[in-house]
Amino acid sequence: MDRPFNVRVLNQISARGLKRLPEGRYRVGKDVEAPDAILVRSADMHAGDIPASVLAVARAGAGTNNIPVARLSARGVPVFNAPGANANAVKELVLAGMLLAARNLVPALGFVAGLHPEQPEAEMERAVEEGKKAFAGSELAGQTLGIVGLGKIGCLVADAAIKLGMNVLGHDPEITVDAAWSLPAQVKKAASVGEVLRQANFVTLHVPLIEATRHLVNADNVGSMKPGAVLLNFSREGVVDEAAVLKALATRTPAWYVCDFPSPASVRHERVIALPHLGASTQEAEENCASMVVDQLRDYLEHGNVANA
Ligand code: MLT
Image (cartoon, rainbow, N blue to C red; front, side, top):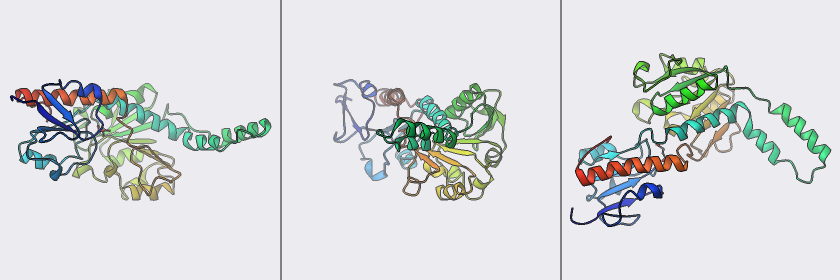
């Protein structure tokens, strides 16, 4: 092409990643006209948002459910993504989520926030004793973690949980456990999602949102979780039927729902720990994702190569 490529950036994308698009050869920005390519993170895109000039779409992340992939494929427009590039960030947040629930850290922090700085020392000491009893938790070591979805994130979570002394049970609705990507040998195989829900103390979901995984955890199976169990969802909101889970929380099966998707119904729920889609929000993950997709985009625009579309 004898002019610079126009790349429209729809979300905040790591500046380090964008630097891989050399000035002079690329015009990059939110408002560039007639884009040759679109770089997007998790903003929802509709077919109408994609002008006819677009030759490729790049998603700086793993999930592509915010992009009309089928419509674009029909137009011959590849969609690039970055599977695995943020897996470590998600893994670490899953570990944090398990600890938040197991050690009652959210109500404990709320309790401390309610203490008054001018409270007399003796009263403060009494309150600390009270909190210490009220928020006693349990350890992760020795408990069973069930993982549904054994891609890169699921495998990293399995590995970390084993290192923490947990027993791990794994199931993937799409691939056989034997074919899972570098799954540690200690992981026991579960034949179904139901088996994972019935047997684990913690269940974490790492599947993409596709028709087969919509409401994978639902009114028919959530009640079979162990009393006191913890359900973690750092995949996609729609993988869980939230209404069914909120209902099940009333009987403590599960006792906690830890997720990355606050909703009007869950945001004040005392048994829900909801984060604002923070799974991949680390500087490292953002750089990895942006770099991976920018490189794929360049390879396509400059050389016509299609990797991982
Ligand atoms: C992903 O699918 O990888 C995440 O949603 C990334 C993000 O937070 O944009």
